[in-house]
Amino acid sequence: MSERKITMSKAIAEAIDLEMARDPKVFVMGEDVGIYGGIFSSTTGLFAKYGGDRVKDTPISETAFIGAATGAAAEGMRPIVELMFVDFFGVCMDQIYNHLAKNTYMSGGSVKLPVVLMTAYGGGYNDAAQHSQSLYSLFAHVPGLKVVVPSNAYDAKGLMHTAIRDDNPVMYFFHKGLMGLGWMSSPATASTPVPEGDYTVPLGQAKVVREGQDLTIVTLGWMVHRSLEAAAELEKAGISAEIIDLRTLVPLDRETVIKSAQKTGRVLVVDEDYQSFGLSGEIAATVAEAGALKSFRRVAVPDVPIPYSRPLEQYVLPNPQTIAQAAQGMLEMVG
Amino acid sequence: MAKVVVKIPDVWGNNKDVDGTIINWFYDEGARVSQGTVIAEGMVEKVTFEVTAPVAGTLSKILSKVDEPIRVGSRVAEIESD
Image 1 (cartoon, helix red, strand yellow):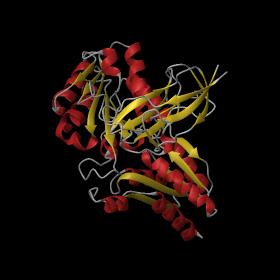
Image 2 (cartoon, chains in turn orange, green; image 1 turned 90 degrees about the vertical axis):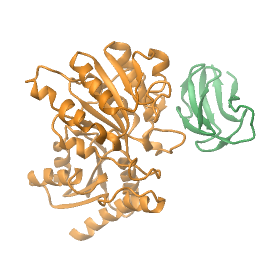
Image 3 (cartoon, helix red, strand yellow; image 1 turned 180 degrees about the vertical axis):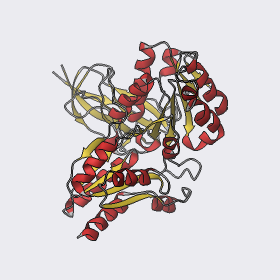
Image 4 (cartoon, one colour; image 1 turned 60 degrees about the horizontal axis):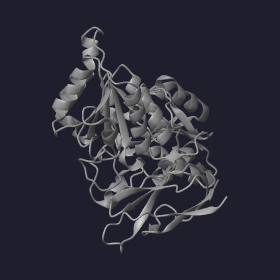
């Protein structure tokens, strides 16, 4: 393992760099991905190395440039497009869920669309209701889109390699507060040792990041780190929590979730997305359908827009205390 | 073998009277580094900059942790050179 420990933003840029070097069909397009290097540093250094033909700054015209990516992919290119905030996918939703997600299916498989659609998600830094959402479940709901949500630098790089090489559209969500930026602090556990060369992390393979016996915490992204903090607190109270980092929502590694649910008998979903009609319900259904649902709870955003006010925002986002409380509640309930 | 101190480069511009911070260390103490390897990242007035290893060797000591204040010339690490 490498001694070098890098941030998630550097890991993402490095994967894109290596893929651009090995395949001339790979190119990057989006708002401020070029000279600026990506508002969250996901493309830093690429413009200087590859120039404006392969790292294209676009106008704020999402329908046009995401449509262009779909067209370029249909013609054999492998575009990576960044739309700064997942909150604004609404302006180009037709291109995403009617064209990008469906054209392979509607052409009877004759058109491949190897597009990576990259975006920042998540809150915790007072950016208000239109710049703090997670929304990955919206896109996981629509058939035809793979959905990747890494929690750390190692996974981020390996998943990006896999996403670029995949012949299907992949939506790649990174949490702003995991990128290791100077102006937005990240948990120390988000930066990890990362090999300098290329490697892949498969889509659809969750990772048990902490083994435990008493309950299973199913989570992803930033919430992996908050759940790890909660688990350390629970350990002091004699409760042993297993934590599953889903890493991808589509494909979803149901098997790992079910196996852990069968072992511990208790499932707690920790989700930064809205609570209703989303990830937590899907996990409950998955475990129930497998006949493994005995005890279930969820900690998610309680179906309100993310508040701008700092105390209110902190109140609605899951945190180590609310996660630990929910876990303790489950153990007391069963007795 | 000699101890070489890693100092913060002068990227401050005219006003050197403001604190910057270390925002990331890319290696732990004891790691091997080459000359020119980016070993850390700093930030001053929202501008980030890289801190490189002046010599090849072992990063023997980190003197300034993440979020600690730094100025031009701050001694942030020691490298035992080869």
